[in-house]
Amino acid sequence: MRIFEKDGITFIMEKKKVKRLSLTLKKDGNFVSVPLSVSYAEAEKFVSEKTKWVKKHRETIPIKKEEKYLSGDEVFILGEKLILEIFFSEKKKKAEIINGRIFLYVKNPEDYDERKKAFSDFCKDILMKEVPAILREHEEKTGLSSSGVRYRTMKSRWGSCNVVTKEICLNTALATHPIECLSYVIMHEIIHIAEPSHNARFKALMTHYMPDWKERKAILNK
Ligand SMILES: [Zn+2]
Image 1: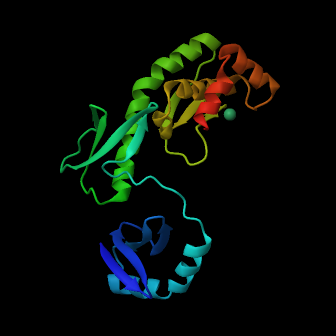
Image 2: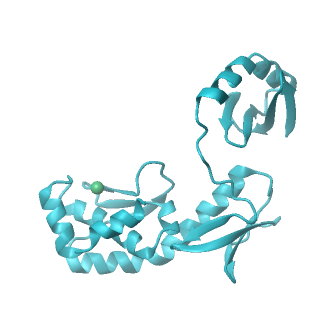
Image 3: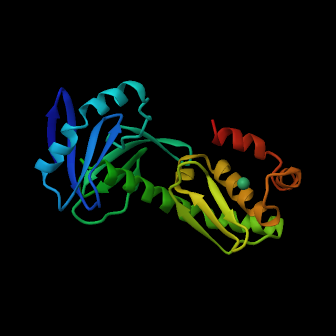
């Protein structure tokens, strides 16, 4: 990593396995991804020509609030508030919850991407533990059956259902919400197997199988 300053702007440069040089403005700094084949000197030249642009965008573009995943941060797992602890570990080690704290082990605690991935991997583990029983219960209740579940980090949706393959996809971030909300999303996706659109029939089926789905949805999107 290298810090570079120009016209009063600080750039945080990092060599990465990426195809091209890129500059990203985040809440906690201006980050430059430098391909392994590009020298820091070249990267400095690249960002030196962008200082005007950075100043303009820093002023006009609201920087999206992002989790930093640092030790001491509050995070939620199945709706329960926990304190995050980031620890260095040379070897791959599974995250664990001990006395209200969640311990995440990473090779480089300074690396935001690694911390974020460790948290999302942990969320996926939680879902893999919780989802199968809920899914089975909903399938038995509705008489509908899925072909399987996948877990992904998604930006704009909680889940999706491929009505052709009957495969359900769930957002790993669901692991941070109460289990009632997770159960609601699974039911929502299962019902799509019977009714692909969000029409009156879909809502009637939801209400039939999960009378309080609207409350659960409200809690999830709060
Ligand atoms: Zn839907």
